[in-house]
Length: 591
Image 1 (cartoon, rainbow, N blue to C red):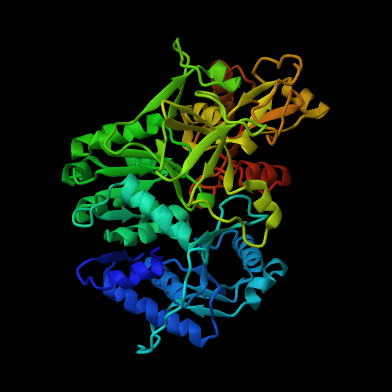
Image 2 (image 1 turned 120 degrees about the vertical axis):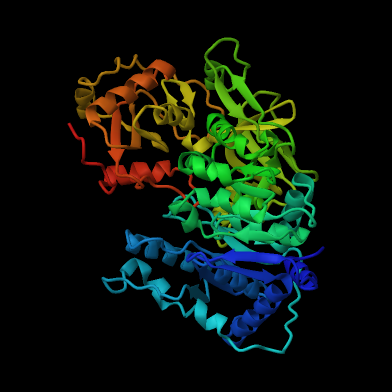
């Protein structure tokens, strides 16, 4: 086995290839593989001098890509276990951020915190919920960068089953879970991505990414995996993309990038932000792999992206939908390289019964193919009793192979729930058709109303298409109904719900059940609009297309919908914050 440290050491032979770091002020800093190895080794010695040994956890909250990557590698060379975390983006809700970071410090039993050049502080002193964080020894990025050059050599023995780093999942902030990624996991998944999936060529390929490095798709997909294939990359700060989404495509054009990935929402933002003048200047014919993953993939969004940028040379076969999750290191399936977008149009009524039947009329749900499993890995779809189901039957996606991680750090109960006999029970629902995997949604997000199953993504898509609603800025969930709710609902514009029907069998036993005793709630960010009219339009659209009544509609301020670090909607957090009265509700345009 070749570990990541072995790959770093071997790549140090090259002085003409490496990583180009783009800092938040726009400065580009190219580092050759040799320079990366030297800087990583120096930082490893710095950490060793401060008592960091093999297996010690180090929390990294670093906004600049060069600081992050070089310190991450330095920790590995020292034998330590880095714990990547997102740095605070704004001062808004800083205390909540510090409390979450403190919980992760406690869970990981970290020994050191490495921050940007501005140390953490709170205007209100040390919050009670963040005491573990402020008690942790810390160093700033500049202290490590300015460490003296060293001549000593570190040679820490690393085995395949040794822990490489902890990837904290982007789920509920109340109970953070650290996925234990081993060196063997990294090698297996990196090679599957670069060689089986992308068929990478170090002489022609170059990666371009703005993805957060504290998230697995950015860190593994564009830092670790390319190292195993000696593919150079360009790393932009996520804040650059957020401020100017067109910077992503501009970087691909300027650096002649051949490989890039992004979540679905980024494709929509890029379409909105690119100007005709930029389109005339760009040549995107270099791009051969345009990955999409980390959140549900909307076929219409991807097509709009391809339609807009095809005149700039973008090949329609470049699109590469994929499926993955941190518990399987990163990637599980890739679409076939050089194939156009593949989708499945299925009967929405059959979907509700757990079957993906081909649609035979104008009413259909379009599901994007996420491709096929990697060689050496096995993916099955199982029913609630653990039996593999047949073609076009919806069930839980189960993954097996060398990319499946050992579990969650310090959390045996959560590990037992998701990892059994070397197999990962993902909690995602999907089905196979003609050998391709189609992902429908999360079992824990599944809504059951009056005996029928609904995927919240389908309802959210309908609402997103209502004029005035910000695309992909919608969350749908249920909450219990009471008599006061029924009296309030009598004034709604949707038809009354039918009487409660017997509960039909759900695909999985772990779903959060809802019935006619549950209210269907929609939360959305909207552009300036009159709220009463928007509510009527949303209720009418959902009822017309799904036959469902939306009982509550709430509008949020721009940018305030709770999301994970990878852009996924946090439905349960949105519901909890709505009930606690802490959502940033919009006040303009109110009736």
